[in-house]
Length: 244
Image (cartoon, rainbow, N blue to C red; front, side, top):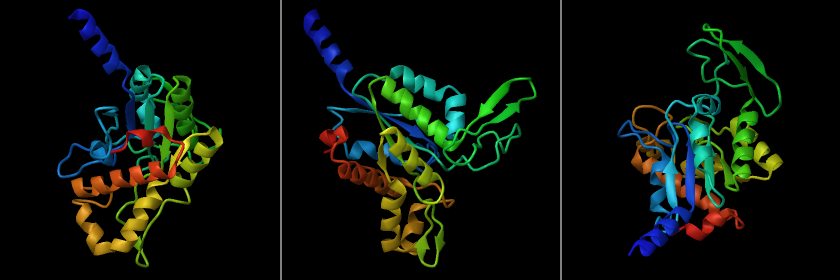
């Protein structure tokens, strides 16, 4: 009986894993709010692939690394796994050692840095948003896993009857870095924003209890569906093999 159990354990260990990293729009435990990463199991055959949602509310690319969260994910990666990454909602503050600047990053995709010294003497080098996305991509590839960069979901903000998009900053930078590094890119912002435009402000408002950023379960499911639509557009992306 032991050899059979050992074989089953080996088979279980070999199942690929989708690691999801991001902020509260990806994983949110503040009900009725919910992140799209928690709805991915609706669209994947989880008997053949596992989903491990490591996103954390309030995190930016910078703090996800700084707090050791990325190190944990990186330590678990094996060849054939996937990393879905979506950041951008928490990056906007000017990076400094104050409470407001704890999460902020430099804008763009370049190699500019800002050196900080915290009150306890700890030094920190802050990079651009693109630099952090690039690190996620590089580290993922080093483990033989497959990085997938996603632009951030749109907020419930409107102008002239159209939902506002982030295609001039964080979504653009995510797309540029993915292209530069040969990573898959899913324009989640555009896919969902196109749906919102068709639905209109009053209907979309039903997805956002409490604020303009965090969706409820129905909104999270819509965004997870958008993720799978983006996967299907990437014909070479092996995640297609695991969709229901």
